[in-house]
Length: 152
Ligand code: CUA
Image (cartoon, rainbow, N blue to C red):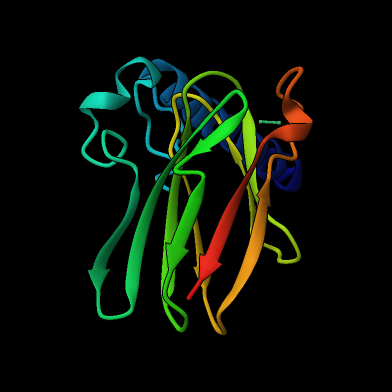
């Protein structure tokens, strides 16, 4: 019957679409990348505009950007001081293995992967001190890997 014909025809069309999409992505070498994690060369951080001189930078009215390098078993800089009532974006990368940047007592937490730049934005409110810990096992000194975030 015609019904069966159209059913078969639409199935063929669907299979065709799937093949086109699959072929398109593989054939053209399209890879999904997250633009919040641009790549960086972990062996050449000294040539990176942000990571060559890690630390706090004012980028606007009440807006700050902080480049932090994680390395077994510390953060550089180890102590980060930012003003209260500001928007602070951390740009994080690792020079060696996977670490994390976790601000104790808050939901601010991200993995730090060598070769990638992780971003994390927080709003600071009142002055205070927060511990920063690494929550990804990164080697023998993992438990001692910590930093400090001071909101002034
Ligand atoms: Cu760095 Cu655990």
